[in-house]
Image 1 (cartoon, protein in one colour):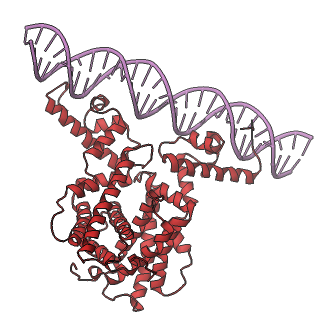
Image 2 (cartoon, chains in turn purple, brown, blue, cyan):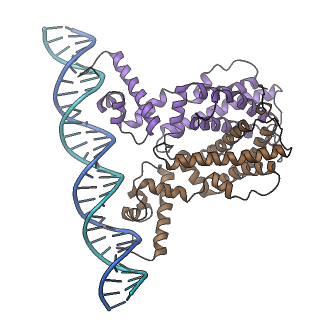
Image 3 (cartoon, chains in turn orange, yellow, purple, red):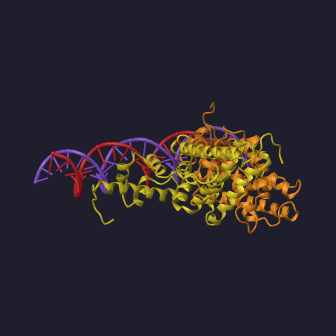
Length: 218
Length: 218
DNA sequence: CCATTTAGATACATACGTGTATGTATCCAA
DNA sequence: TTGGATACATACACGTATGTATCTAAATGG
């Protein structure tokens, strides 16, 4: 605002403007999607010009990729999140609850998730998002599957459970719930619903006859 | 290609080219997203030029809207689908199964759903998609909620069930499953999973303690 | 059989986003 | 203090998408 020609300040200042550009991109992408806004729009939101963007990033795709880098996708969040409390079954329940509760309570995570789920087009040619989403899915599912197998070994889950089937459904339900919450965040009390939903989903995995191996429809 | 100046044919021919343009748009949108391809790309896919598009549609948004008109979103599909067989609970189960099985088996529905879920940006300013998605959600949820209340009245579901909570979860799980299937259609045998998933979800609604009114975590 | 209408192609003006090249002022090192 | 490096702004050239206007030929109505 007050500064006319702000040229090179200190290195930390440069890093700070980089963050401000990412913040601006996050805002603009959330409001108007990833494809439509120009780099000029994003820079203007940060009170800068396109020149600043090209200093820190190669182009819009690189900027978006950097924005994703700043954001721990669920897979990495799950891995980095302390998973060392309680029985495997309790930890599976905690993982589901964590994902949903974080969606309900962490505004920043919610905004980024909203961009990834609803404000950008998932195209093979894009690479950045698609690959991360694949990695997130397989990472989360592997994590859950490991816990569920441990739970079975510990006798906390039925031994004839079809683990692959159960995890596929559980993961889809958790992700679907998060996705729906993002769209209708104002209609629903997310925080209050997270716990009963996690309970119900784990209960389903443990008790649904149709998820047992060699099961017929109930 | 072979035709130099193909001018006005018969009225049915014109309607046919309109459909061909919509087909082309569906293909192109699925492959490359909604925002990036130009009207020229879409017309070329149909073997035509942009002029043909402007004859039948006002602009790209109108074309996309027409594409959605041609496609029955789940809500309308559910309403138009014969819902008159069996008890309310069986019909609730059939509704979930229908949505998932249709996703697994109807290639055209799957393509359109993939576009709507993953290949376009859901923005307020867009209107066309966002409004339809809202309508679809509320329509489907209302349908399901009615059936579940009937099931409770018939004694097929617990009377202290928190219907709103249960329907919110059930809907999110069904939509989430459909969405995940679209992304990883090649990794999973959709048709084989639809039935056990529908069974498990209904089982969850009927038996999960956390979905009862005044329930505490189980 | 002629006039009108219309499906679709083509041409053109305009706007806009991108990438790059250049300018400028500050910071840092010698 | 001076010269290079760097952060950011500005200017320009280019490609491209859009909307509209014009052109054509065929079909329809009288």
